[in-house]
Every structure is written in C-alpha cells, then in structure tokens.
Length: 201
Image (tube, rainbow, N blue to C red; front, top):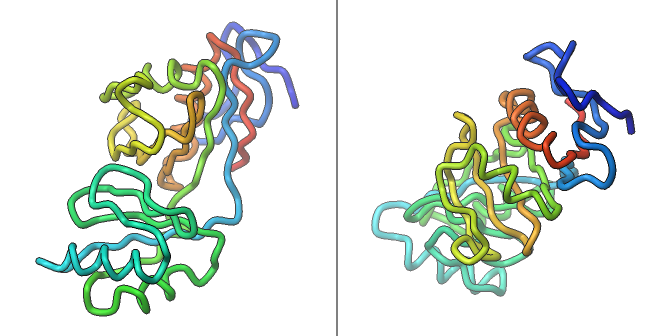
C-alpha cells in the first residue's frame, strides 16, 4: 500500500473523495487498521407496539440464540445489534437475509433491507479505541464499553452504530453516503498513531 504524508495526510485529496488506500501518518507498524467488510447483508427490525417479548422469543427459537433487547450484540448468524428499544440491525452472509427475517418475524416486526445503505468497517489495533475516542461522545474505555457492547451514536458529527469485537477491535456501520467524510476522520485522527486504510470508495 502507498505511504502518505505524515505532515498533512489529506493533502491534495478532495474533501468529497474517499482517501486512497495506504498507510497514513506515523511510519512503522500502524496503531490501527481500518478495512471494509465485504459480503454482508444488513436489515433493520422494528418490533411492533407491545410485541418485543414475543419477537425476541420467536427469533431466538428460529435462529438458535437469544436476542437481547439492549445495546448489545446477540447471536452470530445473523448477528443482531440493539439500536434502541425494540430495534435491531441484523448482519449475515446471507443475500436473502431480509426475506428470512420477514418470514421469521411475521406480523411482530417491520423489516427493512439495508444492504445498500451502509458500509461495514472493521477497525483494529492497539490504538483503535484511542482513535475513536477523538470523535466519540461515549466512553469507549474497555472497562466500560466491553466486548459485545454496542452503541448508536455520533462520531465527528457522523451517525454511526458500533460495537466492540475484542480488546483492540471494533465494527462500525456508516451510511454509504458518509463514507468519504468518515474515512477523513479516521485518517486525521489515526495519523498520530499510524493508520493503515484498506478502504475503497
């Protein structure tokens, strides 16, 4: 990957363009690496009024894992990320995810296909949390924001849903139309530690 300036890592890059893939900022081993996760389908579920307990019970029975009505990650295939009371976004390597969720939820929830609306990013490395903290409105200390904890919040004025995947890892959902702006935040915030960006617009 290309090496980019340590002085002004975004020099010459139009503000509405995703920065080119490569290493930004401090040379050497990067403190954080950001990459797009391909091949995932996404869909949102919103429980109908008074139906959250019935919905979570049905989803757990069909998909074989509890679905928690909280800002946490539940299950793996699909994974359900709590976005608010009675609301989740689901991810899976299943092109028919939204259809399968509609069949599972029946009249208990509204399901909306979101695969084209979001970009999924993995951010990992010893400085990943430090990088995010520069724009976060929540406490990302691993003693507070633990593995599996999730939040729908704002990072550098951009709406993001994120969750901790490990001691040094996060997964983030960003609206596709904000990818360029969010990658600029990653570069400017991560250059201090060295950032490897594996993202293409």
